[in-house]
Image 1 (tube, helix red, strand yellow):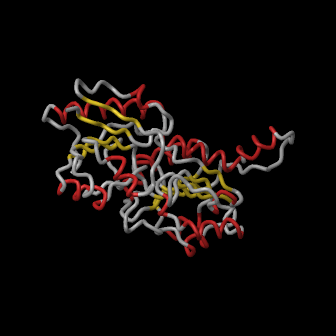
Image 2 (cartoon, rainbow, N blue to C red):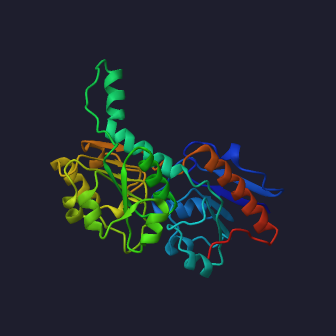
Image 3 (tube, one colour):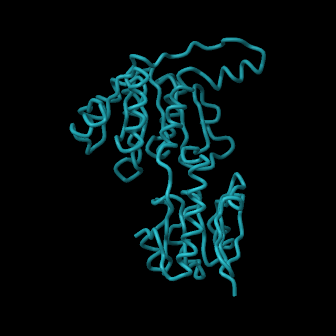
Length: 316
């Protein structure tokens, strides 16, 4: 009997090309579409021994894992996945493994979104193709204040590039120390309120948790300058999406660039799709060639190691 492996959410149809060898007796089925309904997810995966999930595109809560008795191995790209209930997986006897990842791609996209939003690049591209010339007046970044929420690896990268562009960088998180801020070369804000009040660009690089969910709501957005820009490449629910739509529509802030959303893929007709002064990308922070090559090579290694009885990169 073969060991059946499902590759999920291969939107770009690259898995077959990038997946490393899995060994004899392994059957691979690649799914290019995304399934939202949990009953459909269970029906699709019921006959598989292993699943390779691309980041957090398909959630695996306890109620799904409990309905997949054949599942023995769950591989997530990257070494963390908030959409997998690791305790439920352990109870179900499912080994969860991760993969390596390159660390710079989300920070790179963040800088691109900041510049694209400030200079109106998407709008000017569309206008030029429609026969119009110079339809916007951009915002210069040099001399402006860059507010960084979260000064981990990605936040530090963005702050460093912001400083290279001539911006004054200030950072805040609940546990940020003066020593860490000094190490990165930024100022530590005394409070979230202070950072929001002072910043011309606010960029989010916090993990989603119960403490950060809804961190930027109506009150926090109201503190920001009406000329300020908000960029989120972390997780959608850190910002109150409805409050953000209202703030953008009413001119409470000048614009937002978003790579992450409460619901992904973003459904047709979502208010953000017609909200003014936005740049939207479909969760591209990790979607680069180097990352994908490492994801699928390591995923194949995870399967081979599991079949050999010596799982690697096990998440607990």
